[in-house]
Length: 184
Ligand SMILES: Cc1cc2nc3c(=O)[nH]c(=O)nc-3n(C[C@H](O)[C@H](O)[C@H](O)COP(=O)(O)O)c2cc1C
Image 1 (cartoon, rainbow, N blue to C red):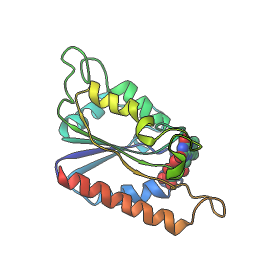
Image 2: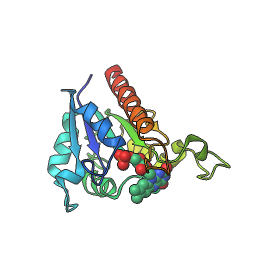
Image 3: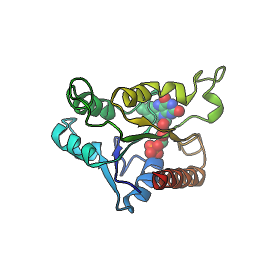
Image 4: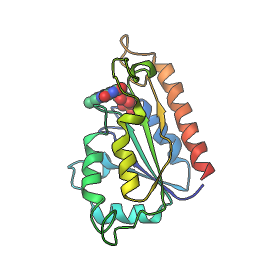
């Protein structure tokens, strides 16, 4: 596995997560992976841009790990993008610091697969909803690899899904991501 930085964006992974917590715990055991949990590092949304840019430059592969929120990323990941992917670093004149790195979006999705299609209640595929991240990778000259995604990951007792099913899907998700990273 090449050196990988995983940018984790979950507002409360310790107390408010089932799926992402399982995935991140599995990633933590790998020594080639650096985990940067944005809500722990920056609870006030004030991002240390130099530290984040340094971490990116050390890595060959960049992963965004997040729960899908309102068809997009959690707010802190957008804040991170807005602050860290600056002109002269990620794009523009001499802004080639991410060039050649691999990029993987790794996300847990509350809704089921059949909702994410034309005619389904969410109308669009996940791939089309992720096009802003794909174009982020294009502009910053990273190679956009297929996302690692799992559906039906919301757990609300007696409403959505069984806990053990979500746990199993989260473990499969972690294994798929790790196997993809080991191919790099
Ligand atoms: C604020 C918020 C917005 C959400 N928006 C979506 C959404 O747009 N589509 C979807 O499928 N699930 C949505 N969900 C469900 C989450 O994706 C799901 O709860 C999460 O992936 C489970 O991961 P966790 O256990 O690590 O929190 C949303 C959940 C929250 C709290």
